[in-house]
Image 1: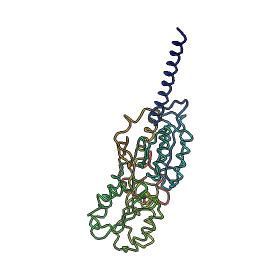
Image 2 (image 1 turned 90 degrees about the vertical axis):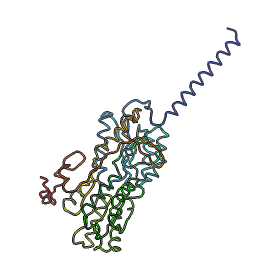
Image 3 (image 1 turned 90 degrees about the horizontal axis):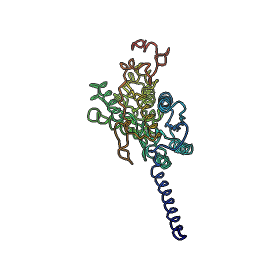
Image 4 (image 1 turned 60 degrees about the vertical axis):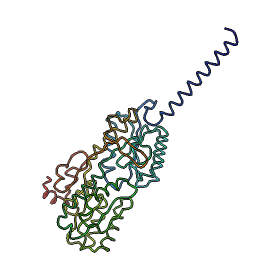
Length: 369
């Protein structure tokens, strides 16, 4: 081979090699969206960020159930990095940054603020970390979502309240205590409740409660009582149990001879005990285990690069994204008559936890022994 031909062959080979390397780089970047398995050795590392610790469910049920299921699916050596934002959206954004720095393989996020978290979700996604939105549908490029049927929660609350009010629905008015506007679930609860209550009972006052805080619900309820007069209030729609506690405190302080029926959600221990004591009428039991299991299954599948096909059962739309793979869990009404069927089950409370000495008589009366 002459020198000119040899140089031409070498030049062609060099160009081919450079092109091949560039193509490999492009393919990696295009696929670096959390959907392909990471090239790493050792156990998976999955991040879990929950929004607050005022609602007892997160630390008591969600966190341990999710951790347990992740390890069942991905192995006991799987690392779960956990943090709680304590209702601070800015703190949660910093926590996402930390998870990105620690190079987690997938991230489960229950957003404090579904809109403001979008930029953090995008940061994670850009680094190849798939994000699973848990319980609340975060905006941004989330890869999957799991929650309960949130509009159904509101309908259950509204239906239960109307049934309990009976003829009293036409004799007075109710107060509606909705959740925080930063939580997309709050709007779904509200919409579900309104679809049942509107036209059936007069809504005297309605509030969107800042940060879901019981003390804010308490102040709102005091204002409603002052404005409407206690003799006209026949019931209270409370979107969750924490706020129900604050509402009931306000009702007691106002000197109601008999407390009007108050709804709730989350089946918190204190709410279960209030239901047994006839202070709170009902709550909504959201089976935490199926929801926690779903989050774990989605996160592990995405972390392993398997995608969500065969795991997700449906799709949902957020404010920024269409057809997000999702698993939706069915909620149930919880009144005094329902408590017995759930006692001791995983994701609920034991008899000893519910029936303390203070509530022994109420438990005996309800047949909880």
